[in-house]
Image (cartoon, rainbow, N blue to C red; front, side):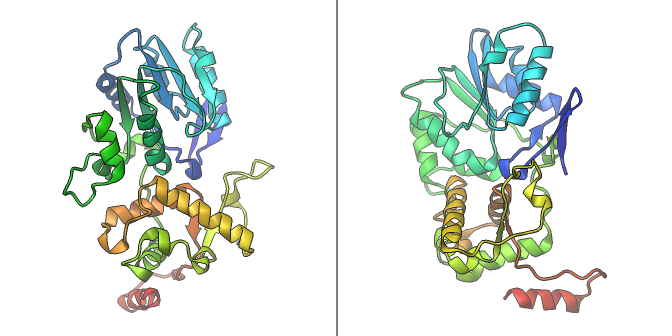
Length: 317
């Protein structure tokens, strides 16, 4: 379990919200430098978390507007900004969903974006550029997604979002950031059974689109769905697994899965054309949205031999 704390206030970081806090001060400084902020700029930060980046931005910009969906983080964020020195910036911290609220006027965007909303958020920024012609966006994205965003005609990764972004902006690579610079570490190691269940699902109809594959009711019954916390504030991941079976529940879960595939750019992708990294990103996006496979082969407590491995692989074919 990963947590973040400040002044005795500790919060659990939720995978379902894609909460991976950038903690390396040198990387934070590099992001600010690459953003080319001017002293009179208003900077929009999306998903500031506990404020590691906003404290750097406040040293470079006239004003910073931070949009954070998690009110637990907002409490810490307000405290850190207040403790950093006098100023009117606390009222610029907005608790809300960046995909739903109307952004105020801003000069540029600087953000560490959760993978699950990358496509949708970038599309919102692109389509809103006429109403608010901001100068630039410096975005920390997962590498596989960034490659698709920078793809060119003829590349296998070339896609509609890349075309739309290039209509209004030049896309440039700035720097690599190690997964070790985050809390918790990004791209965590998955349990092998869940990886196998994911690939078995995707390759059940390897030439169909993922959107078509994940619409199947039978598949929905093999997945475990969890929300962030219940009414008592207890993480659903810590409770016993429950599975929905009604048509209404299954329909809701299908829609939820379709949103994840669409926002992560995999809705129309076919498993036979995907790389290992792309398959890992599908698993990551589903996991961050609280979706997990529970139809997994059992692992033995004792070390495996080759016969055990072949037996487990046969169960997935």
